[in-house]
Image (cartoon, rainbow, N blue to C red):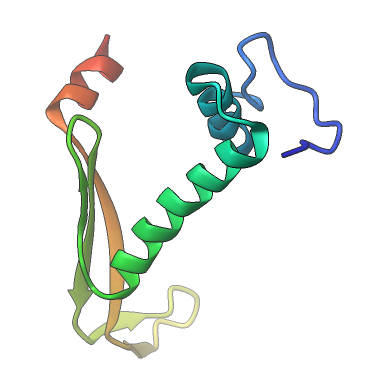
Length: 108
């Protein structure tokens, strides 16, 4: 996966953000798969995660965290400019909750 000439820092990340291309490079370097196989593996993992979430299933990765779906009911909001009450439709939202191991690592 080419990064279209985007400059990378010394650690290989784009300005502090881990991208799909970065994940593919890590898989390529650590497992020795070809770049195409590495990119395909990353894409398949992400596809399975997205597919499970689209079916209404939560995704839990031990030692990393959980992607949790939550249904929010209809509620009344207020337009801050006019003060008029506006109904907010029910919707499904996704949240991420980091595991305790991840929280400890981030805290240092």
